[in-house]
Image 1 (cartoon, one colour):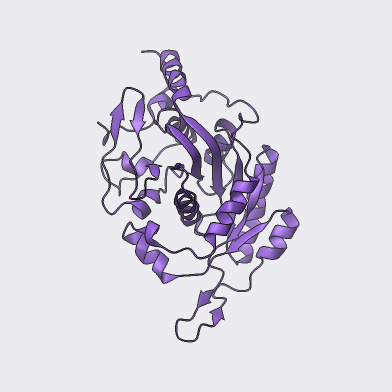
Image 2: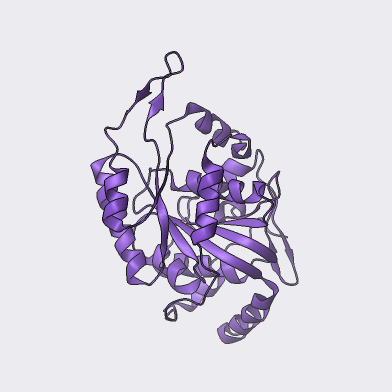
Length: 289
């Protein structure tokens, strides 16, 4: 089968996926909790009765499956594509780490292969009818996040930062990137804003004073929430039980995002063809079947 025939087959599967809203979560830099926010957003949407999926677009540093599953599930395939495993509460999850022989296996790919894999997760996965697809973007403003914003029908992006000045500087870069490709920014979330002492209840700003309000005002976007530094989150993520975390106040965040998100619309401009035909089979099939 030629590359063109494969593309036509994938395009034929797209009408089977009816995703109303696609919300990407972006940080600009790693280590600020982007994947955690993606997980909490998906959980909040699901707890309100909506059909939800999570696309882990961080191909070289995937962490979503570890949060949602105690044991790595086996991925099945069907005539219409890859079937995404479902979490305990019914969230559909797809990540490169579900397809590798071992979750410790490194993905050493150049940009075109990474970009093609992300496109395949949108086109070759049988998402079915869903209200929301949350996309956990890789950090930075290069090939991979650009591929998502150009090739997936975006409803908006949520920015994630932390109190450090460096994180604030980089999240501004991410905001400018989103604006440059015409994707609306739904709001800003600051993670690891403070630590609540269990003995005294006093708030401690471990990573320095928050700059979230001034960043939100500068970007003219709402500050959705300041999340605390909570050891319980780390424990539940390590155990594959993030759905058990009681994210206080996150329900209101979800509803604000729902109110701001636009229905999924076509990408702002077409994606250029990848230069390497080998990228057409980028996603490994080691754990499928």
